[in-house]
Length: 249
Ligand SMILES: NC(=O)c1ccc[n+]([C@@H]2O[C@H](COP(=O)([O-])OP(=O)(O)OC[C@H]3O[C@@H](n4cnc5c(N)ncnc54)[C@H](O)[C@@H]3O)[C@@H](O)[C@H]2O)c1
Image (cartoon, rainbow, N blue to C red; front, side, top):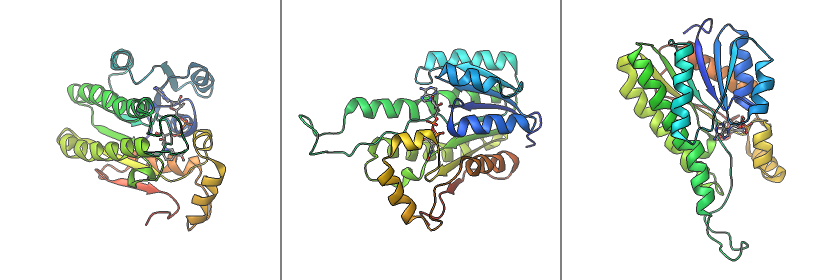
């Protein structure tokens, strides 16, 4: 698919990967429908390019997801790319003996991560794909997973959501190919975003960098270019692109 005149929904467009890809894809001629929970960051994003339209939405609520997708399709029936990028990075071991009075992984934290990183991807995808099929729009669903899907210690909830997203992506590749809709995952390693630096202690990050053959974290542009490849290569389907500097081979 050509980026010129592609109609792309990006979730989590307010910062990090989502913001950079929205600006880049718009600069390449795509129409970008940018969704985020953070209205302020969306407002500044809209100023970047007139091809970007912004939509404030908390994706953990299926009703508001339906409303925003209705609105987007009423503006443009030809949506052909959905990028499920919004996510929260939270860390907690299953049992933390230093944590009192309850050393067990918080159920609230578990539910919060499942809601944003897994349920929201499901809500968005079923809603968008249903309309794509009815409108006979061919295209691609891009799901942003993580190296954590392979089982990072200290990330029970986060790892579970990302592994589940990779599994759903494979299911959708098999189910939706007949409609001309591909489904692909990108699994970044440690990439320089505010979200990653907020989520990870610098000591932990330095440790991961040390284990990475390229001895550095990745740059946001390296994730954006992977997603550009996914959109442009119409025979690429059902796979996960690992972009982690060789940390896991
Ligand atoms: N940065 C990394 O090193 C890294 C590595 C692997 C995977 N990832 C994944 O990449 C994606 C983007 O990461 P990032 O580093 O750009 O993060 P980020 O925190 O910079 O951006 C995430 C965006 O998602 C939005 N968001 C969060 N909850 C939302 C909700 N309920 N509804 C709507 N929007 C919501 C936030 O407001 C934010 O703008 C995430 O799914 C993350 O898990 C990041």
